Length: 387
Image 1 (cartoon, rainbow, N blue to C red):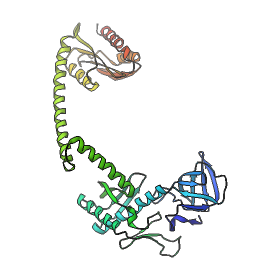
Image 2: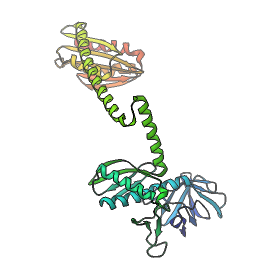
Image 3: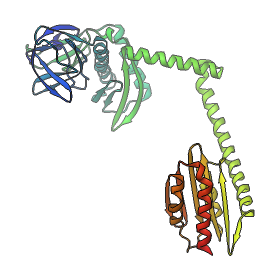
Image 4: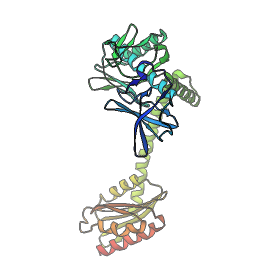
């Protein structure tokens, strides 16, 4: 690549260039220009998007020192092409990248926390520090970053060797010098704002999730709307939202515990009712029923509890929306009865399948109209087996 325009002018939005090579792969054209302002993915920064002539550029990458622009079509002409960067995207990425440099520099300046890793994605932005940072320190870092944004410090590019091909250094005046090949803003003021939206312990240090510029503004707007929504629904002021939510969660938890207790009592009543209405076949009690008011988990618990007594065989059906399920279970002392072949034989009626242990099987299907028939067939097979 003879000229990387973005190296010295990150604000170049339009330029003219010639196509010097291309190839086609997977219905996309990989186009090489004699010069480019498109930034290729690398150094943790996503690639630019934009247009080369009438070709929409969706990705840019570098390979063996050559920069390729992936377009949806090949431009009709090959020289003097009008090329244009998707500026909204480029400026956003520069806000994030310059924001990362500032955030890393301030973390090191205030607390000697060096950045040992970072990620600048389309939405997820993080830096990893070599030491753990408390919430108080993180807030101080964020405050200092925004103070330096207000001071509008210059951001400049330097080539210590004097040539563009030499080492490239990004400098924030009075604060930071960092090797970097990415695109950056002209001053810290253009970052707009830095917001550290989350943090977590990561390896020996901390991982800070952050956003800059318009991403931060959009995030603030969303959270302000959410705060207003919660404030209005809870009928409290902003400062009491957290307290009220914690109170409501505790109340819901208490009610959930009460409901679970009542459900347990209800299942015990149901258990007694089913045992009382069981069909006696020789030495065994056969309990057959179908349910729409119990969840499948509750039904499993009920079946397990019933067969904890001796001489009991269960055939349960359950319908929930368009899903139909069956449970077959038996007491441990009825070892001769293997329920697996039974469930395998009846489940095709429900357009489903099932299986499990010899003493406890279950299955599911999508034909609720046949549930009664499947239950009757299971009963018929079991009765023949135990007689």
